[in-house]
Length: 507
Image (tube, rainbow, N blue to C red):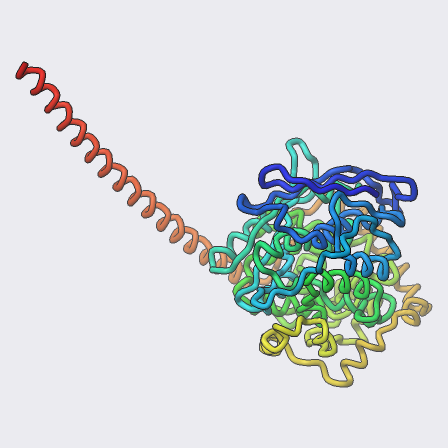
């Protein structure tokens, strides 16, 4: 592939030309767009970006489509090219043998690829105060039809900024390189931080990568992340450009990150649903199904038939599609949730048995998996560990072994699991047939929850009124200043005019 990088004003543009050996498809994903852009700050300059950074950013955009050779319109360092070949077997032909690699800045600051979701918000809560967050803002052209909505994430970004934290939004259309739209590589959302690494003196990069993604807990079997190809490839390449991984929440499950956020000052803004509006998730996707149940368990300690409207909850089509599979995606979280269910709803009780919530408690998902400390950048490790321990307990030796011995093969192949999977599928099919309506929101039935929501909304309204009042005062003061300036100018002009008239009359 031939990859060219250029800039027009504050916009950096990447162009891709496929050659023989490159691929237009991988699985159901296809190469869709030969160029993309990123909007940079006005004072940013392409010439100030290390070529290895541009090389890594290019790989993150095109990796699934790359053949065996890469040609840039710039030259990367030999050590970077060697590391690319070592980890990917791809040859870079554009190399400057005299170019040094980018070093980790001595007085650098940590970066976070922030999404606005619960997991990256938990990472922000646990990271040092000087952390700089970078939000990848998907460009939406006029007329674009998409379920994706950025309003909630924008609100979270603004909320964080108003409270003194650094965060910047980078508009880009790079997700359209592939079809369907999305990240070519799961860590591609770090590209804004990479392109701004020297501009902001960044020394590491964090993500909202949780235990389920890093160590594969909840999947078929445990995998030690430092030994996985993903870490060996991308972790090595990020380190080679002076931006090592700083995986703050890699040892924390989805249950733990939710717990961290609920205890934090960000509890009102974290929203994993990317289809909803500010404070209003879509309540019609798998994430909403899972997060709503989990939030209820963590807030109330149990789940009863009065906690939620399960009739509406099981009407979520995307959730039904996941629940009839064996294993269920994020089954460990479903096990944890259902282990706290004490009601008699037939679909919930069957799901509880299918996910082993009647036998396993999974309380260890609320705790921190300590071997993950090696994935936290050494410069900030002690401070972050102290923060983690301030929010969560550390797993015991027995619980650590439960993580390391995670294996779903026997459960998935068990005849009772297969039987329960079919039973639940039949129940959900019958439920679908009797529920033709599309839900707008599974309402919480608990009056205490309603009261909490009302109190929160009133608090938010009061805060908004204060902010509006402050803004009006600022505007009022500016208007007073302008009026004063106008009066002074009028007086000045009036004096000049009078002098000119007197001069004419004296002639």
